[in-house]
Amino acid sequence: MSELEHRIVIFAPVGKDARLIGQVLGQARLACHICTELGDVVKELQQGAAGLFVVEEAFNDAFLREITGFLAVQPAWSDLPVLVLSKEGLDSPGVQRIFEQVGNVTLLERPVRRATLVSAALSAGRARRRQYEMREVDRRKDEFLAILGHELRNPLAPIRTAMDVLNTIPGTDPKVRSISQVVERQVRHLTRLVDDLLDVARITNDKVALQRERVSLATVLQHAVEICRQQIDAAGHTLDLRQPAGSVLLFGDRARLVQSLANVLGNAAKFSPPRSTIHLYADVDDKDIVFTVRDHGAGLEPEACSRIFDLFVQGRAGRSHSLGGLGIGLSLTQRFTNMHGGSVSVASAGVGKGCEFVLRMPIVVPERRSKERSATGPSSAHSDDSLRIMVVDDNEDGADMLQVMLEMEGCTVAKANDGQAAIALAGRFRPHAILMDIGLPDMQGHEAARRIHEMEGGEDIVFIAMTGWGHDEARRHASDAGMQHYLVKPVDLNVLRKYLSEIRDQALQRA
Image (tube, rainbow, N blue to C red):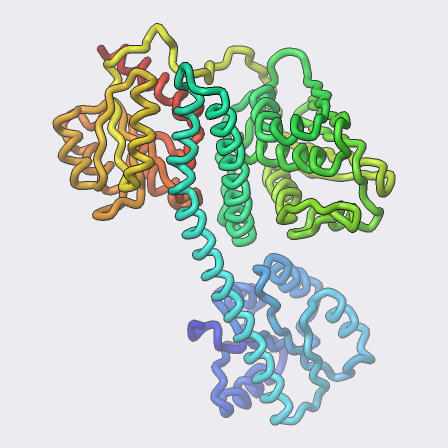
């Protein structure tokens, strides 16, 4: 805790109360800060405080608005102690309003003894210290999850690339291909679990920022269905998919939109009996996009509808279900939908009667455009050996698998395992693009990218960051270093192929 977080903030704008409280607490060696103006109170609390001392007379409408607004946006670990000095105690109608609106209130009836005043302040300080300790625990937990995600993604990357290579080798034994597809599906599932855990850590600490872009509705639907396809097919479900005719453009975070919809669709597939029909409808309502997912499965009890979006709640996996899950997906869906300015709701006629989820977001682009760039793989017209790609990764298995995949795409590939080697190699190899890991053993990938950018011809190189770090701060550092693209391990190879196609086109234009 900092010094500011140890202090007691005092607000008693009338009479001598503030000075007297400060003197009494000061004699007990408690740090105090007296606010003389309403506007100073929240400002001081935002810098840190062990508690707030207020006289009842200060609780006018303006102060109540200020303090309740501050308390409403406290972090999850925080519950600021508020100590109120009152002449009439619980008999005062003003005190009743304070209890109802403020929350963690300790009432001290005047005249109050010095010992009582000091004891209340010390108790508030002890409680507040425990809260700050929980903040530190949360911070360490988030750091652990971020490191865990990074460490899990590193081995997942070469596994996924290897499976992709196996699936594209002509003449591969069908049994081998079938086994590799099983591994690929499980890697994809594990990646989703890792991403969900990291998203929970980031979003509960307000560390998630939407990466808004224009994206077609068809693309969002296609990717969400692709994520859930294996789960749907394995249960023998039929998917009834309906969407508007023509092209509809959305302005939102492509990954979060897909994730939100896939979480609800996967939930429907999980809790529906085998060979059911699952309905996925997308409709445009003025500027709103409305997704509806309806199933005929386990349903929800009425009280579960109100808490199904809470973290770690599994409302439908009751005694009749032995289904797993972390109870995270629907909570993330609600939070991402809200971040897009929308809402998500659920309705159910009861247990065994299915559910209907509705996601509504005001993100439809008014002028719809039908011309969109293709996101398919590299064009055969440009499939030649002229595209030079440099892979920089200290994970040798990952680098080797990427080299195999890239060479199968017709690229010329060179590898480096640390930053210094990459800088030296770039001068000789003169790559069109560099796939750069961030956590290199001798320097950060950002620094290596900066140095290569400064070399002659370096300004034309396209950098694609490839890393296990998926948080927004890491993306910002990569962008500041001049990295044009950012891929989180295990890399989506279709996205990588799209970037390679664009890089090949650019190289041909410059030639």
